[in-house]
Image (cartoon, rainbow, N blue to C red; front, side, top):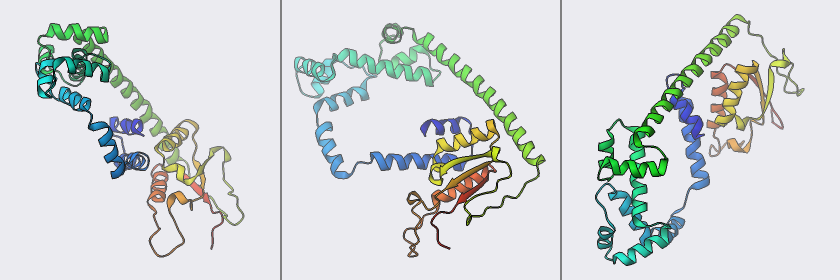
Length: 287
């Protein structure tokens, strides 16, 4: 879902803001449903993990890595001896203090190289390295290239990605234009749906595809597949069923408490927006 959201964001000029909002709500729903931690669990987590001294030490390093930080400084701050801190740090992290500090500094330098046009000298200073040559030495040890070469690779990668996106947009626009013209040129034919007899006499069975339960159309990945099938295979009709799925929380209880048409509305809006002809089969439904 995040990858799909990113694609929508990169194509912001052509994106549907309602679809972006829908993706965000789906992500929030997924996080809330699967990863939400209640207060009691959170208290236990904080007690077991955040109370450890190593967490406070790492947090301190991550906040002050840009300063001329030393093992002595950290030992004084936490009121322990250098010897004890050195052994404790090695035991908890698997590496010594200076290596960890340089890892943090290098990661920050790489982030600035990717996201800013600051000079190598300024990036070295901002990341806590005494000189650009020190940054070069540690950076090359980790990435195998110098910071300048790293930035050049990033710039070339961005340029290539931009060219790819431009080509994709060109092809996409061409496809959309052809599909739009074909729709406008063709007369719209009525489709009769007889739910009592349980079948649909479609005019052209080669343009139909069964999607499945209506609830799956809420998923961004399924929507992308539907758009892909329409563009590549010229699918014009989709067939969905089970509109009364429990996933939609639709109820025959008229108390007003259990009705929720938001998901169903989102499906129908999506199908209407992309100009799909669709039908649904009513199963086990009352008059």
